[in-house]
Length: 116
Image (cartoon, rainbow, N blue to C red; front, side):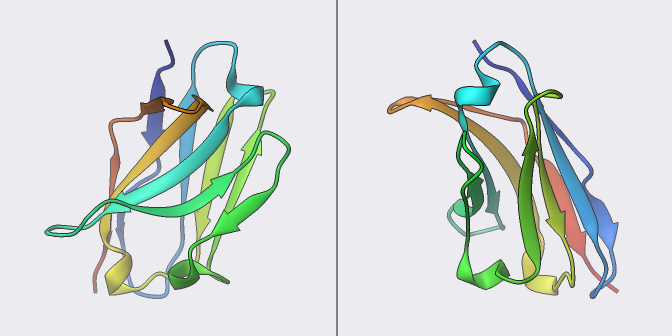
């Protein structure tokens, strides 16, 4: 069983920055794929960024150049640095840990609101 706790969300003005953190429990973090997803009202949940156990990253085109995903295996934590935030980035952001195909865990989500 893996528990994920997200933090760092909040209200920010357009153009601002936030850093989300996702702290994991258990002993499988270093071998897990970690992903950040988001879900805006009325929309499907979408993958924003992912990072493999080896550190390879992928980022959605909509946030490329603005968002960066990273991980610290010693702290069992994944980060999402979000810069140049836009209104359309407003959503609940979720962290997901994938240990194997069909074996994934979700955090409870953290709200990010971009508004002036």
